[in-house]
Image (tube, rainbow, N blue to C red; front, side, top):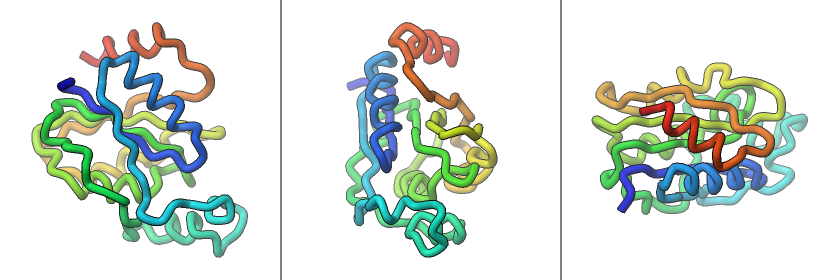
Length: 159
């Protein structure tokens, strides 16, 4: 089994495509972080103040339930965690994922997709969800088409 895992949450499919390419380039296993209740298009309408995603992001303590806990994080040294940027931070389901496993003495490298912003406060918002012995690092915004070569070069640069 690989010592690397790419775990990702993708609401619309964009982050899923990047995560699959990253896992292949890194020689890593792949795990999808799925919400217990899938998001609908209406849930993701950030212009609607009553949309599910808007309400969740307005309550940073809220932890959406995840569908399963089958990531087997204990088998990995390095876990790449990917997500779309929502309101300049990671969706709170990423906190749920990080708080659902023991990341002691692991390295977590973040990657994200975004419609126009950078990581913003994503790293700070996620650091609170891992133990002090976990090294959590801001990685890259992986928008657009990433080549296998560019992804491998990025992964190699992390060692």
